[in-house]
Amino acid sequence: MDSYIITIGIFIAINSIVVSGLNIIVGYAGQISLGHAAFFGIGAYTAAILATKAGLSFWLSLPVVIVITGTIGLLMGLPSLRVREDFLAITTIGINFIVEAFFMYVPFFGGALGIGGIPRIEFFGTPLHGFAFLVLCLVFLVIALFISWWFTKAWCGLACFTLRDDEVAASTIGVSPVKFKLLAFVIGTAMAGIGGALYAHYMRFISASDFGFPVSVMMLSMLVVGGMGTVWGPILGAAILGILPEVFRPLIDYRMLLYATLLLLVIRLQPGGILGDNGFVKSRLKAFSRGGKNEK
Amino acid sequence: MSLLEVENLHIAYKEIEAVKGVSFFVSEGELVSIIGANGAGKTTILNAIMGLVPSQKGSIKYKGKDITNLPPHERAHMGIRIVPEKARLFPQLTVWENLMTGIYGIKKQISLEERLKWIYGLFPILKERETQPAVTLSGGEQQQVAIARALISDPDLVLVDEISMGLMPLLVDKVFEVLKELNEQHGKTILLVEQNALASLKISTRAYVLETGEITFSGTAEEVINDPRIHEAYLGG
Image (cartoon, rainbow over all chains, first blue to last red; front, side):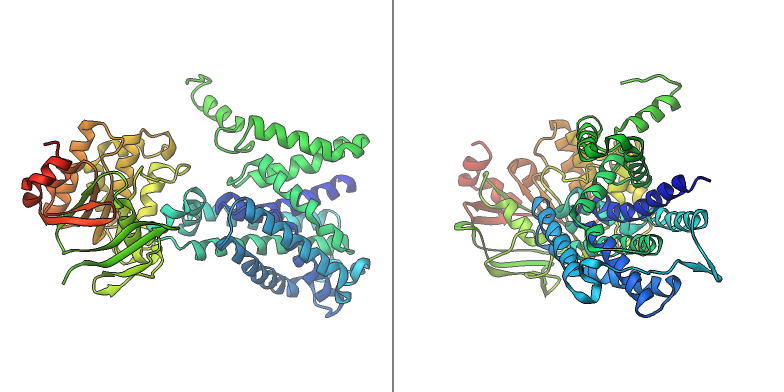
């Protein structure tokens, strides 16, 4: 397979994992986050430092990455207990800038130079690159999807949905807002961490600006376009927003403009996202299952 | 010992005092009504019992335990459920999922099948609506889901807030009948807050009359109905 296409595939797969994590926080538990790239970065930096300074392999550092991003995610989830909606969005933006500045100005994290020389992931002694790395990413994506799907079926998922729909009513039926908001933050940020670790080992060089606020915006855009609160939405969103810039490469200067236009169109025409309730995919499927009759 | 004991409860929204030192109790197996005009503080009292609004002074005891400072979800775990004003369902979830949220955390303790059969017996329309998102239901249907969601957990104390509001008259009768049946045949303890004084008094054991944040009269339902002042003020002469 063409290495160009493989590279795009790898980025889409990594973004799908990270956006699936965001989906659990935003789509399932209803806690808006505009700072998800911070956790993507925390995962990447943890993996990078463990690999370059401690000489740990990806497989050994992975549990550490999950624990560290999940723990920091838990701490960063605390504001969601006190602020909501617009104010939570602003708080998470703040978190993103703080984390980025941390990586940028603390010498331990390589400062403005970032961290280079991150080794490839080895699988039984064979370094993974190209297609093999894509397969590895897809394996993690399947796990992420499974967790997302399981969440929609499990009690903790239902509890998160009730928080999203009506927090007060949720508490009156015995759902602890504290417990389930934090649970969503921990799982969602840990998934971002895994994506970050994959990213670090694939790029083999990372710097703070890879995990800035615009990246968070892009991730939320992917989620909104694909469909919040759906299992497959993050993949569709990551694929669309991953492929479009390549297709429109001649228009690279207008990339942000295209993003904005797409986002506005989705918000105007498909407010639930393309795969969301009342999205055209679902209504087409319904029409199809009724033998093409589109009854009102 | 009373199941619920409220003593000298004070609740204020900013400077406005909505409830001014209210004391009352509900014993096990009773159906108690709090009646009063709009803005008397009825809903505020219910919300305080559920833990949704903080109280400034006073205490709320439930099963002999002081719950004044417990968060709502812990009160829910202790067996208190509220049927809120205007249903407050989870709009994006289906009727079935809404019902399931009602047994969150206590799934293993109850026989789901039996409860569901009972619930669907009370409200047959819910079976038909099972797979619909709650937001697509009519007001009356939503109200029924809200009652079902509270009842499915087999609660020890049910708080019912303005159930008759926004329901068509036929359904109001039906809902009061269900409450009566719950109380008489299933021994459920119910605290009812209503503007529709006559309908609620008819099914109550006892009642309290609330006026601008204070209890001005209390007694058995019969006493309240027969008191001339109450009769004039709330029951239309």
